[in-house]
Length: 478
Ligand SMILES: [Mn+2]
Image (cartoon, rainbow, N blue to C red; front, side, top):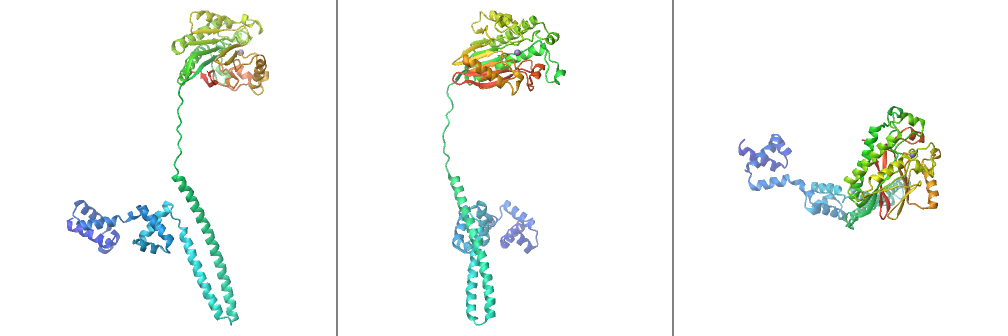
């Protein structure tokens, strides 16, 4: 292809204004003309004047990109009758004016219904003109009754038509005014400057004591998975593993809280029923260890945990309130005033106390009574096993019997929080914490009518200013 052919394609296009027209006039396919123009451009052989025109033609649509022109067209159209007049005033083509209005409609600054109103106005004008003509005719033909009758009928029709048009106009005007006010609101909202208020982050750490509650381990009592639809399984090995998980996951939670609060003291509640003992025939038959052997194993697990907390925890003081459970008794029936003298668990607590006697970080607090009361900051914590709460068939869960018991105890001495086990159900309420169990769901929990819950123990913080704040389960399963 020589340069002459390429330049003649440019001429054709400039002469006819579009690829289609150029193709029709020359018989050359429009795509060929387009390609030739492109290669002429790339070869830089087009004289500069022609190139200018060429660019002007291909850039035709860019008029709509100038928003001032769009707004000017809309503004002018308010003052004149037709878009053709707008084109004349702006000295651009009518086509361009239509493009500007299309853009204005997209920008939401022009509503096509304005035109409808203009049309309606024109119609009204026409009708009034017609009306006047009719009036003239009526006057001229006032001597012909038939003619008058016909005219009356036409007049009536015209009046009705006029009425209809007027009501349409009114409705349209109303709508336009509504749209204008909506538009005003949107514009105001759009232009509003955001009011900023800077939030300043909290400075300084809170202070708290972290509490881990251990109870209801029942380590030598097996749970046969087949008897509970596979929901749970428990034996000596699983008991040991769960007890290790209790300390491991409990310390994990403590360390997490240390990010936000200064924690110097950890409170490890040992709230009883670490062993199941021979208190029923059924337990005696199934026990995996005799009571003295079971209490030895429980002691080893607890001491392993205390050692771990002391070596891996970054705190200074470990306070251990202890209470005996109903299972650890050495007597056939539960004894209340002398319970502490007849409990394998009390034996264990006292032995643990001796083992850590020389460690100033450990403070083991046993009690001869049912409650073991510990003061933390200004908060009075009342620890006990939970078996003094009469469950009475458990209608409505443990909340009602627990609150009844707490009310009774508070009459004598008020406590901020009661912490107990025995029910194998983890609950955090404003005035009490009921601990879950390590053994997990078993026949006992089933008999109490509890819904199955995973084996877990309680973790919570006693904040210096706010009392109990963070509460979390310590999960113990692998
Ligand atoms: Mn119990």
